[in-house]
Length: 157
Image (cartoon, rainbow, N blue to C red):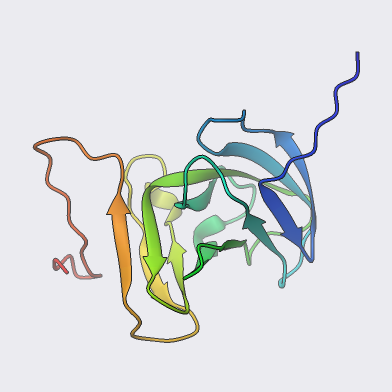
């Protein structure tokens, strides 16, 4: 028996990818992919998924993923960039337990490699316009637990 499938969640731009391990339909994103052809202008656009706008990030990369980021657009589009990746690199795409969206224009969200496995921590950076408003929603909260958005000096925003 031969089974073939076409993935519809990830659109590779200026690149080619292979899915090493696909995420089952209805589950949180957890796909292992190989970047068969990749260069500095390449990115992945993630389509509509059951997570409804949760921010995507990479983990278990075969390259230094510290510079990876997702560019978020006010229309809900997300583009995943991996500037340190090269053809042949492998990475697992996952979702943060957070929705982050710019009020207008675009913004960047970066998840430091050192905290991927243990914390929902991310860094917000401007993209096309500095100073635009944005919102963040943490979707995995626990009653009685304190959560905060802080700046680089750990001051609450």
